Image 1: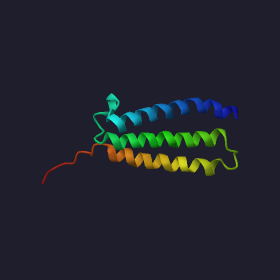
Image 2: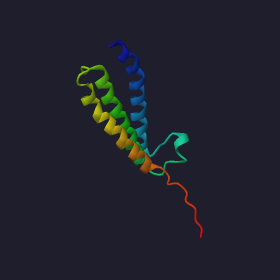
Image 3: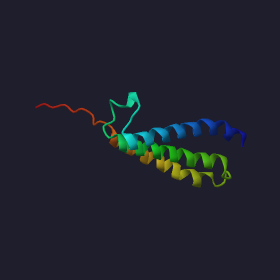
Image 4: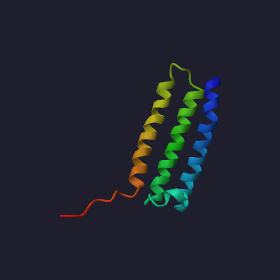
Amino acid sequence: MRFGLYFSVPIGAAALLLAASGVAAISRGWLLPWQRRHIVRPRLFGWAQLLVAVALGVQLVGLLVVDSAYRSAVTMPGVVGLLFALVLSTRAQRPPRTRQGG
């Protein structure tokens, strides 16, 4: 249990920061300065950030609360949420440049 507490504080802080950034992107279309060049759909990216925050929260609950025998069953939705958030954030980014030529 002590091992999980060392991970819970940074994971919880990261989840809260991602949730705040996601709400700002959804409600105002605001992005962090280093994200503005690559993201063309800020609201979709905000939903991806919120999903990452929820998935981290699910994994944090699995790490701290659930017995080790059931931990993988509880944290698996968090893994699926992280993968779906990866798809959403990829869809929110600027498409790569392609060569035009003949």
